[in-house]
Image (cartoon, rainbow over all chains, first blue to last red; front, side, top):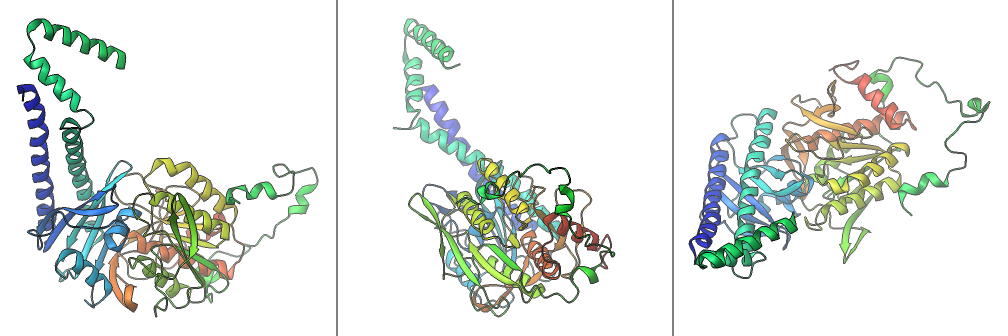
Length: 209
Length: 278
């Protein structure tokens, strides 16, 4: 692998790791701000029409990442499809809401705040905050805070998705894998071949302009 | 036939008024007295008003919802989007919550559920549009839309449907979106957009002098109907919206035939920060 190819790959892979840390930090901070037991980010997998646990803080952190469920049912599905944030407290602790949530998270939350992750017109997923303290009343200011916070989480998620697409496109049989191979050959070429290659690239750039 | 084509069925000429014809379309000067809450809805139960809940479905036989006159679902069959009678109920709980709020305010209104959730996220915008088109075609008096879309490629169609509803005297009541992203249809002037306030009284609502959010209604920590015949305590603009839908049902039951702009005027004049008692 040439230095240039390696640099491209390292840049993308490094971004993936960095953005994953950013998402993890986001759910940790969401959990802390709302004094909650857990927080999660779900990513929409549009191809399979499913929501996937992408980052989890608190309860379920060890087991949930990677788990999937349908994209348009339950509270998270409603939030994703309608673009509306929702805060739910289960006072009876014995409704279908709790059982459904328990099936997807492995524990029974008593309350749930869910907000869509939106970037421009795209819905990327859902941020959830589970089991905030019940001894103080909820306010609309907290709802606004949740929305603002989700805006930041959505940008992090979007950056990660772009990095993933770049990595997939440059790797193996990816759509743009040829670009990485050309970089590799340019790196290895002698001066004459390299100059000719760069001239061809310039010509290509003009054609595409 | 598309609901958008209905204007073409009307007699011609549709867009001009011949000389001397003003008298032929004389309308009653209905509002000869001050518009108060007493005038607007006192004694009304919502009887005779047809309210549509465009949402996740409505649970049948929920004690806080009562009779649901009809339930349909918008589903995808291959490339087609179709509307079918449906007995799956509610796939989330939210539609049941909205229906319960409307029922509490307008106990004798007719409730119809249009389920636009459950067909998957992909294509959900088209499903929403098909559900709204069906509702406008059915000529409901009020359509509760505690939902929005961010997809701009649906914007033209959504505009057309909202305008068609407006001229057919179907009041669309839509949740405002309190996040830093543009969404629709609540931003349209042809619908009533609703945000939340923190008061506990279901009849307290405010007229906003700084739109696009037009009204604020109860949206904080409400006990609402949810799945399994139970209740949950919920917060969100999506619960403020059915309060206004319920009020619309009360007003339209007492004053049938009001146009959306007349109904908006009544709500403005009876708002808690205008002429209504808080």
